[in-house]
Structures are given as structure tokens and as C-alpha cells.
Amino acid sequence: MVFDRSQTYQFALFFRESTEEPSAEALRKLPDIVTDMSGIEDSLGLTRLTRVDSEASFIVGDMGLVPAQQTVWQAGGGIWKLLFQTNRLDLHFNAGEYTEIIGSDDPPSYDAVRERVIPILNQACTLLGKTIARIGIVYSGESSCRNRKSPAEIVARVFYNSDTINETAAGNILDISARINRFTQWSLPTASGSETEIRVNRIEEGQARWRVTAGHPDTTLHWRLDVNISPMEALEGVTFKNNVLDAFSNHAIDWMSERITHMSEIENE
Image (cartoon, rainbow, N blue to C red; front, side, top):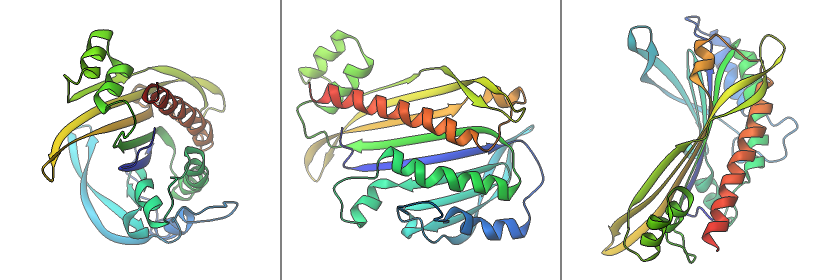
């Protein structure tokens, strides 16, 4: 499966609830930590983060949504974006735009992105003095689907029964979407020092979108894979050591690769 229209990654760390802000010195050092190249072969364009104006945002509190300041840094003209709130850190990577800028036909592999991101997020947690309560990794892609199968038929073959598959193959369905959460449990290192079976959501969303562009019909395939530690774990007070990122990302990327491979097999049948 070739996602030729767009590819993005999001790595989200949710910290144990706290009203304490990191020191100004820690926030000043954070961009240097995140762009550190020690032991890393390919920067993937993440070499210098520039702080942009803080953005107003909201976080969920005991009384509902409450205002919060969000500090934002960017690199590569927005290809990378780092966002920090009191209890959350997000790192976004636009792999599609990066691939265009370097003039390559091949986007970075899942493993290359993981190897660039996970070590620096480990260091960031240590610098900020934060304890991890949840992790999320999201991959999104958009494809023109220039091969034999239409976007609608690919979605139908992944999610639907034979009647819907036949209708899409006949061209009778233009727009179609579906979402499945494949719940599982992974053994992950917790702050208590033990490996514990942790509840994990593995959410897969697929959508075929039909529209008229420049006077011509155009259908594209949109796919989103979202792997995250269940909010129930945080509600029950489970927290994790920083090295949980290595174990979690290994599981997550393996599952994402498996799902994309499955789609490719369907596309090329």
C-alpha cells in the first residue's frame, strides 16, 4: 500500500496528573534534548526546533475542560511539531512532506521513525521530571489507490461482509467508512518495577472519500491506526517507567506494519 497523498505520525505521552510545571530551565533545554543526534544515524529533518508563540488550549480536569497554555516548537518548516502542556507531550512528524522535500520516492520506514523518536522522548521525560501514565502512537495515511482495487473496495474487504464487498467491486458504493477497536493486553514495565499485563486499544479506521476536484471525480483512501494504553489504566493509578516507550513502540509498530501489509495484500489480489 502506497500512501502517496500524505503520511503523518503522532507520538503522545500523557503524564500523571500534576499541577507542578517543569522549571524554566527544563523547558529551555527541551528542544536540545529532542533534536539530540547521539547514536542516531538519520535525523529525518529533526535538527533544530524553533519555539513559536504559546497557544491557548484546554485539558480535561475534575470540573470538565479547563484552559491551559500549550508551548509549541517546530522544525523543518512545520514537518516536525513538538507540543507541551502540563500533563502531556506530543511529537508530530509529517513524513509525506519530508519525503517530498528530500526528493525521495520512499518515505521513512516505521522502524526509522521509531528509532529517531523513542530515545529522545525517553530523555524528554527524564528532563521534565514527569511520570508516564499513558502512551499513544497514531499513524495516518492518504492514498490515490492507482492499482486495481478502488478505495471503497479496499475498505469493504477489510471491514465488511461479502454483500458490501460485491457492491463496491461493482462500483455501486463510492463513499464508505469503518472503525474497529481491537482490544488486547501487552506485558509492559510499570513504575512498580514489574512487568504487568496492560490493556491496550488498537484502533483501525478506513474511509473512501469521493469528491469532485478540478471538474473530475476523485476518490481517495484514508487510513488511521491509533494504538494507545487504555484510559482505564490511568484511572486505576498505573504508571510506567520511561523504558516503557521501547516496549510499547515495538508492539505498536509491529501491529501497524501487520495491518498495512494486510491492506497491500488486499489491494494486489
